[in-house]
Length: 327
Image 1: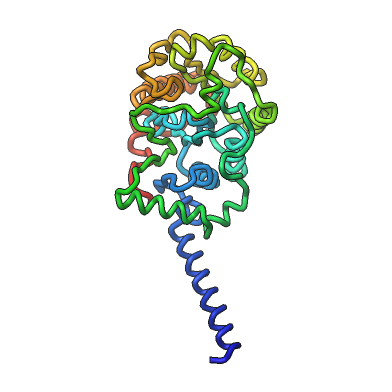
Image 2: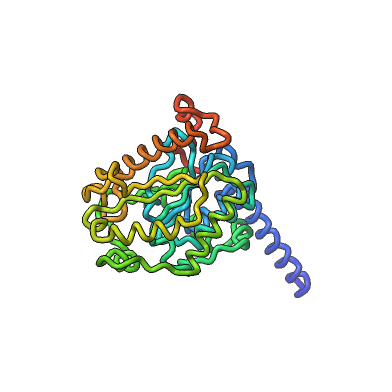
């Protein structure tokens, strides 16, 4: 074989292999980007930030009424069990509002959403640096071939073989298990003492910009202040109150607030409901989700949503994305 022919064969073979790989990745479509995502049951595999960023280009819009923007504080809230509305949990572990805003931007740029609930917790605005990966439009092409995609495939295979647990459900909520969870260094430092919470100005601006975008689209917004274990909350009560007043200063009269630090929800602040004082155990998260579901039903009855979801309590279970393997 001549050198020229060898080169032609090599290049042609390489291109054919690449085309086959791209075609296969597009056909598998684990993020719901290249095929109709409606009625599919997709789970997060690999890097959760990348997965939720890409799934917010179509999968979320096609299968859910709205989204929940948050951090690890709300990551294990089982939103898929709610009957009032279908919410996708965009919360990511260690996530800050700048990362969550990048995910929200994808959602708004590709069809929008019917409603948005936003977590109000000081961790979201404590920093603005990306944690591990900078979310950018190039991730779209990475879904056809990249190291992130390879990691996702490895994760999916290990789960299928029983080597790793399935951590995410089709509504984006994560299973932390029922064991003791250790706060990361930043969150642990934030919860010490009685001092006010430090707010990163870039993160605060990001929070305000995210809410402003939702308002500009006339998307119904609800803010959710999560519960904190009573021993921690008692020491930081004034700090939490001050933080909420700052973050919610620009909310509109149409926005709703569900404050789980209020007296009526005191039972949720029982330390036994928490794995570490901040993150709820599964049973506590289930109680919170049920209470949030009831409150949203009240908001809907009061006219919060201009278009009430067509599936009511009697039909929600039948239309909910099934807990099946990715298809």
